[in-house]
Amino acid sequence: MSRVGQVLVPFAGILALWYLAIWIRVPFGGAPLPNFILPAPERVAETLWLNRALLLEHSLTTFGEKRIDQHAFTQGQITRRRGWCAAPNPC
Image 1: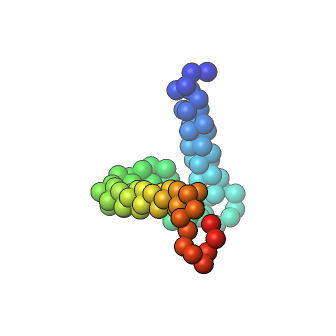
Image 2: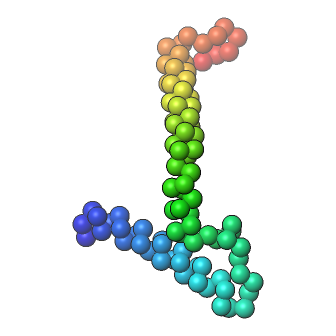
Image 3: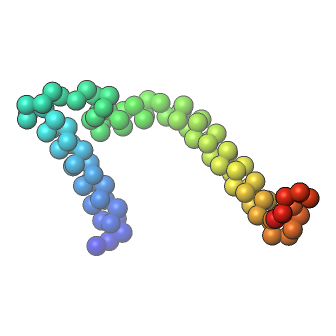
């Protein structure tokens, strides 16, 4: 199987299971689940598209915070390995 197939087959399978879950939730006697619990994939895609600016803004903030945390962790590891710890706390 090609690399494209290795990506598309699982994606298509998850999408098929999602649609199956939406289809099954109504006909088998149970009360249908509200849309906020199990929305249709196209509704999720539409919401993502309509809120793309807000999502991008918050994604950039999250990415920046992750980089700061990663930098702090790296600096802490360097400090620890070189024995530059504060006096009362052993490295």
